[in-house]
Length: 483
Image 1 (spheres, rainbow, N blue to C red):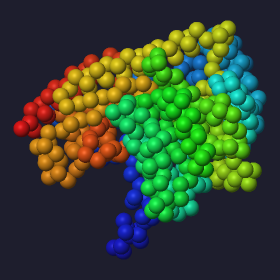
Image 2 (cartoon, helix red, strand yellow; image 1 turned 180 degrees about the horizontal axis):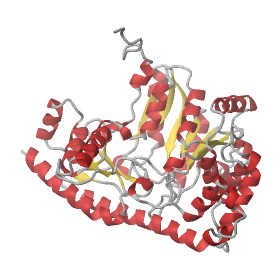
Image 3 (cartoon, one colour; image 1 turned 120 degrees about the vertical axis):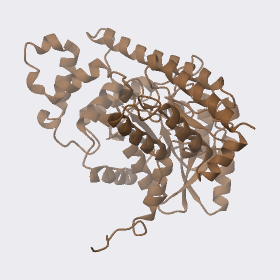
Image 4 (cartoon, helix red, strand yellow; image 1 turned 45 degrees about the vertical axis):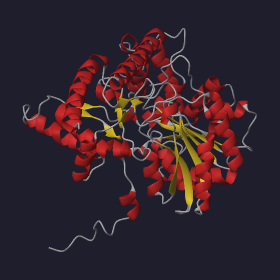
């Protein structure tokens, strides 16, 4: 038999360098165990896998927003719009909104390609929604509708990174999309460390220090990534802090890449979300002062429509020549999927007061966000009640990132197993309880510290069982490796 023309030594080395812990080793093991449970229900000391590793709400039984799904269904099957029974099954405003959207789609067909930036009428709707949120004008031509936020991030990395000498400032801990994308496009991740002792605070002095260090090594800084609310850390930035960050980017000539996909997920009364564009404009800065890219997605918030792959980026402060190049990158992929485009327009322009479906829409939205806040608090309290574990306040997003101080014997056992200590802990947790978390080493962390990322997404009636399993495991783990 002839040898394969492709080996691990002959593929693109950038692919080998790229890692994505959220779907990494622990998750692969969990999927294997799930198959074993399916074939032999008594093969493990638990009867199900509890996926707390990824922000995928509907996989954990969160229900979609009725208004959004009614509009989507009618857009996908417009033949039923005129039927009498449709007015019984669907709300009047869902029927009206679907008709309006279909009028904006060439051929009234959701199965057709659209403009590479997204359907113009839907971009108009999203622009109006951003204006209503921020109080500043939006040009629909600044919007690029994408299959979730991830392709938009890749597009910007592709645009900005020319070689390994180009650096992107990224928070540590960070969402692994950024490290993976920077690696794939051949750039250098320049880390700046969030301050865990200050609630995962972001200090401009740390940004300046890391920038100067990178410059001394010949790295050319191109952009700063900010994730607000934070993933995996769950902090919500204060407006004054955001102003400092905007000034830093303006002063250093950096593109500000603002990951704002958790903007609806704020759980504490003393914090609120402010978009970086709103902050920059409120400071009097316009397109000539700062280049800014804002990312939004239909996967998070209260909607959790991960599988529909909808999102957008708003680009401001780029010259016409650069915008042409961004459009070229978008056009290579033809267009994003139409269902995702429709959902992005609904997220930014949902049911309004006075609409037939508003009461049910508001009730569904409020129930989801209130429940997420309660779940976050319960899990935060549970982690802080465990020996050697400390967990910062869950201000927003969908995750907790507790720090675990592991006994020396556990560190030695991890070394023998040739794995990171937090990965060792996460694997043992999975094998004992069926709970899937992501080791903090997959997100980056201060050397010598160990964390796990755990979502707050399992349904509320399952949280107590998760806490019970987690507490029992942790107690036994610490006893096993103590002394």
